[in-house]
Length: 461
Image 1 (tube, rainbow, N blue to C red):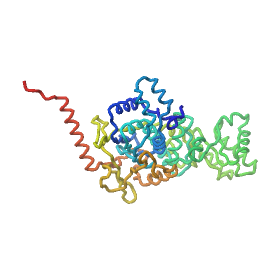
Image 2: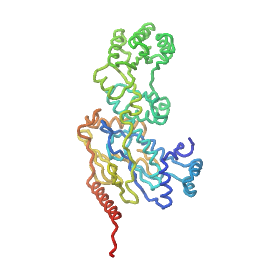
Image 3: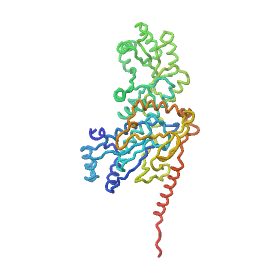
Image 4: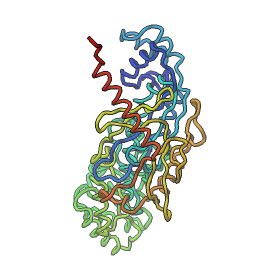
């Protein structure tokens, strides 16, 4: 990928973003626009989503540039005028962004962020901003459920190898960490984001040796205090060989734990625990992996399986039960006037807005979506994270800040909101009276205007 632009991302856009930009340019349309990024409904079985991905969206906005090679490629398409193409070399994002900080639980129709900028600027960034916030919110939301199911036990991200590409692998590890996942096997994510690394060994290491004992001995010699994978051949026999290794070495610290990766994890964990305890190795931990998701983990925890930690891969990595969100980026204001769609099931709310969360007894009791600047009770969730194209202090929050926020904000949600099953009654989200009135007025105006066009007035004969 070209090194021009924001890490070569200037052309990370759907074609229609650029064709609309030229049309806006041809018409001289550069008044201020407001776009909302929101999702319309929760995936089945979910009660909230956890906002994530803002940091990458702001980095993109702050550094977005077109390079000469980008312009050369667009010129080859034969669709754009030369004056328009040359104007792209001066393109900069100069607008404002109000957003819900990463790690905040959010609900349907609430703006996760609002982009307010000259129309061409606000339009072009749609694809990249949605791409990053959509995926990372999806990943963080799935991981929050996994962490909740683990009930304080260690959770490690093992998802990299089956995730959908390198960007997803990196951004997913970051989102998982925001949601409370303790560590990742992804070394590059550890380097880039400072996420703790964790890993054990692969079955291939054991298979490469003629004897499982030799494999365990060699690995423990190179990495004392490691976790040994015991299910390559016979799980319980593997546990016995770990016990033999520790006894022969006379070093109780030689092995920190064992990993179970297949079979009936609950039953095997109980039998392995009994063997280890009988050998005086109560300090040796049991780590489980292999096709785990929040439901499987919850079942093991509820059954009191003696498992100290979980490695979670594919199901969390691709958010298998809910791989996409009904997320949209819609124009809500242009040139000072509210804008909405009338499309069935795909309408939106007009104008700049904020969301206010009310707490009762330390628990979130409901949200109110209101016009920005409207007097409303509760805590405003959207804050200015970018002004005039530069990040504010709130927009420069660290990964650690987002992780702490997620922990604190999730603790404030009602208990039934955190359960793995759908709530009987959804978390309450309401519109303010003023925003409801404005929305209905705009709908009437649009319907009246469409009716007048559809039924032209007849001239008297």
